[in-house]
Structure formats: C-alpha cells, structure tokens
Length: 215
Image (cartoon, rainbow, N blue to C red):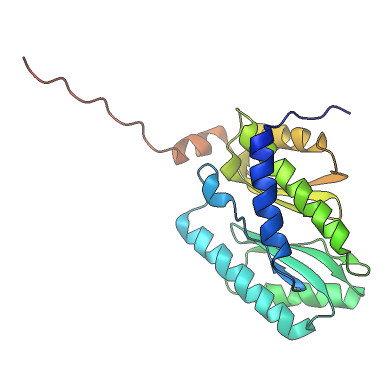
C-alpha cells in the first residue's frame, strides 16, 4: 500500500490540535466541529449555512442528551444542513429514535445515519480515530490540487467520512488519497457535488490592476 507523503510539521500541528480538542470533551454526545477550520482554506458554505450548522450540532446534541442521557455514544456533525450521525447505540430502536430526534431539529435538510449497534468504543479506539482524522486533514492541506477548507473529516472506528461541497474530480482525488493513509479501514463519501461552472461562480473576482498614473 502506498503511503501519501505528508509534511511532518502540518501533520503534527493538525493532529495535536484535533487530539487536544477531542480528548478534552469527555461526554458521550460529541458535537462535530472543525477546530482547525479557521486554519484552512475558504469554506464553500455560505456564512449563514455555517452558523446554521453550528446551531444544528448544538441543538441536536442537547436533544439527544435529553432523550438518551449517557447510555449512548453519538457524534453529530452537520455540513450544509446535512447531518451525519456516528457512534454506537445499544439496539435498532435507539438508532431509529436518534434519527427521529435529529429530524425534528430546525434547519436539518437530510440525515445520514451511520450509528453502529454495539458497545461504546474504547478510549484507545477514539484516540486512534482522532489521529487518523488529523492525518487525513494534514494530507488535504498538503495537497496542491485540493482546497482543504472544502472538506470536513470525521473518523469513527477506522471509517473516514468525507463531507463537503466539491467537484467530482476533487471528490475522487480526496477519496483516493485518504485510502492510502495508515489507520483508514474504509472511506464513506457524503459529498455535495458541484459542477466546474458552479465552483467558478463561487470564486471571488480577481482584483483589478491599479491604473497607471499619467506622466
């Protein structure tokens, strides 16, 4: 298996930030935020969508906590109003109930329910997942042909979930690159595919050259 070459500094920085953020939140319901997002390139969501995503994650986590207490481990991640549920619950009934709770949260457009029916993952597994997420994010930052800020990365039990608003080329490139990273067992794509024309329309206009002063 080929390993993608990643800048040592980039990997260390991103993995450390991600690990510190994840391990400081010792609660069963985890809000999926990107602590390193401000360090990355332009986010392709509108500012309104970014605010709504934060609200969805906070309200969703609160309502799941009210419904289940600490007997489940559920991560909620929202990107452009599409919600990804990962983690572990005890049975199919709880899995369906969690999706119903999130479906009633304001501004949720769709739900991808990836909850596993199993016991809660160990601290060792979660730490490994955090490091895997850091390596994937670092590889996106290092890639010269990808805009790292267009992606959100979530890892659960070795499965990497890639979210974002990207072109088909970007989706395929990021997927191929992620599959070569150590610790990645599976890649699940949850993309909103943009055409090249749609992407170009989102780019800020190039600054005009200053007019030469008359002599």
